[in-house]
Amino acid sequence: MQRITRRNFMRLGVGGTSALILGLYGCGATPGAAPRASASGAGGTTKGTVLVGDVIDHALTSDAWPGAFGYVTFRTHRALHDGRSVYYIRTDASDAEFAESERLVHVPLLNAARDRGITNDLYIFDDDRIPVIRHAPGSDSYTPLFQIHSVSGGGRLESASAIDAASRDGSIEVESTPVLVNYPLVKWNGGGLTVDDAKEEYLGGGQLIEPVDTEGGKVTLKLHEAFPGSYYILTDASLGGPADMMNVPVSAPTWELNRHQATDKVWVFVNGVEGSGAMGFQPAVFGHQAGHPAWSPFWDHYALEWIDPDKARLLTSASNIRSLREAGDLKEYNGVPPTDPQGFVVNCSVPVIGGNRTGA
Image 1 (cartoon, rainbow, N blue to C red):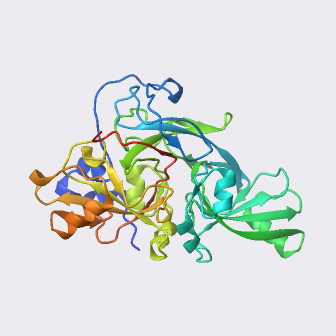
Image 2 (image 1 turned 60 degrees about the vertical axis):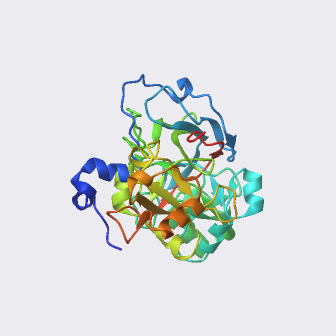
């Protein structure tokens, strides 16, 4: 798979403008002056139904910034990567019992990724030692989809290589569990998700409302609307060009989830009805709502273009889209126009569901 860099990606621009390229990745700009505020001072009060137990606070909307998005604050968790601290959030799990006990979204489709060589490793100790991960952003092998391993025995272990060595010499026991989890990293050695100071656009300067609070153990991200009744976050993407434009890390192995039917579909719009979604048009549409057995936070990303913009109307379901695509009213691009037919996968968990604001 050829990597699309920021430079050559911009040369592939539809219509010849970088603004359009940004929009194709969800840049629903709502320019205008507004006071900046921390999440604690955000004006949004509309609440949804929280699906993830680590959610501390959220609002579906906010009048504290001009952008058409709310916010969600997660409790963060610390791990070690090669002896250095990293911080992650927890959103989804493949195992029903584990998901229920940890208050995560159960995603049965993730089981299809087990034993495929495309998951990361998360080592949990049987005492109070800090967990260890194998790959962090910057590695070609980084993915937020972890297999959980249970470690007993041994002393201080702060890297996957140290765990491997201790396992070989018999000083520890490592039990690989069948549980796969979606635990996106938000801060790591030398990097992290970035803060959007202007808070005007879907993408803007990044997906964080404010910096990761490592001492307080929390992080606040933008919360975006989609149909049906879903509010999601954006944390990583499988392809370099889109990831760069989104200001999120590359998670190349997640592309393989597509091959093993561990993804769901998402459609964004490049023209049509104006709204809070991509390029200022309507919100995205999911194949299924979070919690449905066919739903996955790893989305096979598609873009839609109305052939005749005068026929455009608000679409709220996958069935709407499929029928209009088959009738020739919509043109579908794999990924977005510049990446078609290659496409890519984005990781967009849904911590909150609720009634759609758009079209209400």
